[in-house]
Picture 1 (cartoon, rainbow, N blue to C red):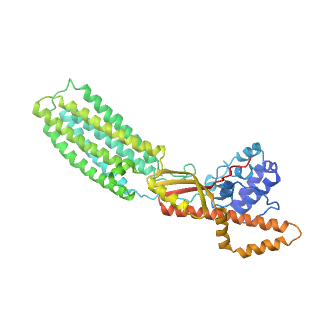
Picture 2: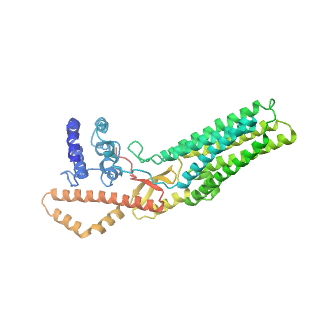
Length: 460
């Protein structure tokens, strides 16, 4: 019922445009509509069409069918119409229809969580930073220490950043929709980048400026013993959070088959790395703060207090720059690892239906989620032989012999048209097979886009 209503509305709204098409284009459009929606083979009496290979792949032989491109009619009729008519037809407005009908995407209510270790690290760091901030803030009120103020600012920045990371993790698990068909996995990179910028501006910048301002006006802090106790307690809390983050990074590295060092620099999920580096900076900053207070208490020179603040600020700046670069590469879009790409290409090169591979591209679209695209010059002989092996050569030979005995060519043309349609379907089956096997070779490849390459080039 839904299909029939759609066809009725389509005919009502666009009948004038359809009647302006040339007869071959009208016949081709009718065949495509009927075969796609009704499952029938509405073969036209004039089967001598010259298809572009991409048109065959996108509109005749793949499961995506008629609505696999934003402008479904364009590839079908542009070879038979003037450019103006083709553009006009391609510009049909589909706003009145449901977008989800056209995408034909399988409904996904929630993205499967494969990085629970990252979520655990972020949650642990969030609550640890809140507790540490409370302790540091109380000590700063009692001591007025510049280095303790730097640590308070550091904890505020850490807490805010962990909150941003937690929000990014939650948002990235939203299911794909019509506006974002590849999902929201990259959103965690966005919030991780914002978190890194926050570390640079609030954590590093404010701390360094405050330390420089107090280089010549600093006074020895009071109640250093309380500051030492809080630094020791904060060290234990931050150390526990750091252990959880390191464990998360190790799990992520093992999942991607990398060493920990390589994962820190090139891993697909920067979230756990961000938590680990921030916690590592926090632990190091506490050691610097403790050393500064010891130096002030030992020498009586208050200048060690703002110097410690400046050192902590520079440490945060280096961490922020590292995280900004990591997330920048993830957002720009980078290719999958070389060994995964080589495995896929090796499989394609050794497949009998593949003659040549062109324009291979890949992209990381989320932690552990990849997209792969390639144009393939198919071996037509191998493809047809595979099809005839499945369906039977003798049956097709019999049909061609019987049609050739007729006085006119009507029967022969119909058999040829039916055979051509079946070959196109066989091409789609081969594409589906290649896509499935590619996803088995590299399970992280969630989206595969294989197109037929025309070595001759587009027809004039």
